[in-house]
Length: 225
Ligand code: CA
Image (spheres, helix red, strand yellow):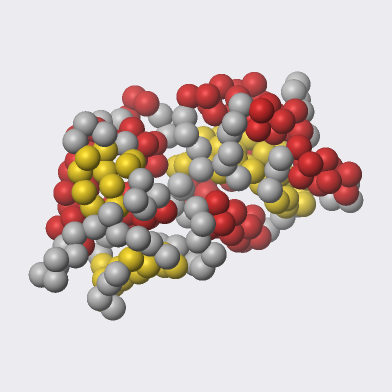
């Protein structure tokens, strides 16, 4: 998933960037609200982590702006301990959940994963389609009860397509799931990765869940639950 992290404390920002990256997300980490608004206008994010205490425009105003621009991704706020008004105002401004500083990374991760699950309409930590089951927490795909050996990039593409099942997903959108910036992107990479994924997924039983929609992108045709 592509995450936007807005935190002005450089050390914490770097820590979040690194740890969230290690758990399989593409992370854009910025230090102020203005930069966050710019990035949100340029890219499609799946979730934002926003510190409320920012220099310049506040985290609350940032959330209001994002919501007024019809950005509907889940927002997790970081608030200072003992400041309950912050949480209430943050939630009222359009945030979905909060974590109180200082926090254990595992707590942040658990809340973030719960938000991502809910936002894509899945309440379990698995997504299933026919013989294929994804374990989102373990980043593991199982096909006909056998673990599939997927690379990190193949897994990310599969999870994204399954979360957006029965919708056309563009190559650009998939590239955003793999790379933080424009300059590293190459649409040919997506074609190669999807080709590899298909070879791993398609068996003799006719299971063929990824369609190409010419000129538009890819479609995960099976209903996921
Ligand atoms: Ca701060």
